Image 1: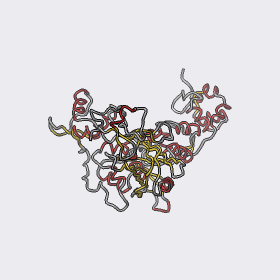
Image 2: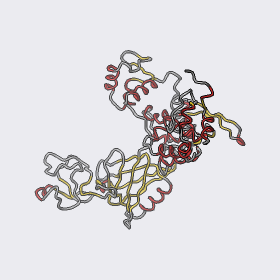
Image 3: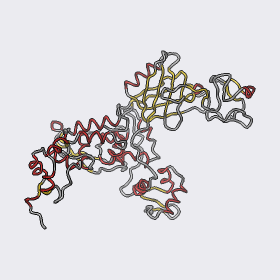
Length: 458
């Protein structure tokens, strides 16, 4: 039996039939409260419309909220303060999330749509929110520079080098400042992958370039379109494995990209095709944001303060006579508070430092700020230092504190009778339950304080 046209309702007619706002009908269909369109795209049968409960449809809306409000809530969900390498969510980004099906369009301008507050809150709670933004929301040049953590001029250099190309454009009306301007938009996921795909670039140097300094990218030669090739060794550097592993992948996987140039001994592959294959086979991942170091510091009066450093760089000395350094991006407020806390002769105590690549650390004193500068991209970089001899492991628990055994500066020798602690057996007391009295004759005072085994490898 063929339905008549009069038996089909579009969203406006369906909302009118139930005497509810069109936005309420859109939310009801988008959230599954009423069945999906059953007659055709955007059209419902009379039976479906009349079976819907108008009061339930009306009550489910509770809103909507504008794109600007939704963008602010999603930005807050990314972290407060907003992490370095992560631009804030814009109202236009909400439009892209609607196009991706992550939010339901409830009305207004399609570029800056109205959406449901509850759905925005649910999206904000998702742990993969940063990855979803990278996947579905393209970025303008200024936002792209923030996502990469570099100056706008450095991002322009990236484009000049042919490493990125626009995926689309948008027309922006600046009204009193030149009228309509076409702005290129770039794939955020490609931007995030740059430091993985271009491992030969010192991205830390690019990100910390001071204002007015020549870009570290300026001396590189552009890549011609279709001529961005990489050897097997280059693929290995991207995937952070050995060349033999890549050769094995190529041999065992029929879908590994074919060479586009080179020789049988030294084949060359299209970089974009190789990166796509590595992503598809989980050999590399897309960085979703900066790593973070969490610090708990105590001042001279014992009060503890918590700080955060984005994109931290921790350098540990190889011996007790050296100096450990920790640098990272900070807010102005945290930098001022940390500098004041570490001021004075004895500096601050680091009760607990949790940073990528090492176990929790603690330092009983002399932690001080040795450098703070603002990079050309506007970020504030802070560097802390302390005597390596004072460094120890941190006790369990959020407050931290130095435990009895410090970090080893040399491995134990064959004659060492101490327990083989991961920390190396440096003990700040004259008697230790872990060592016992039997090993007393082989212990000596350590320059950093406490005692250690006399038989250690140098």
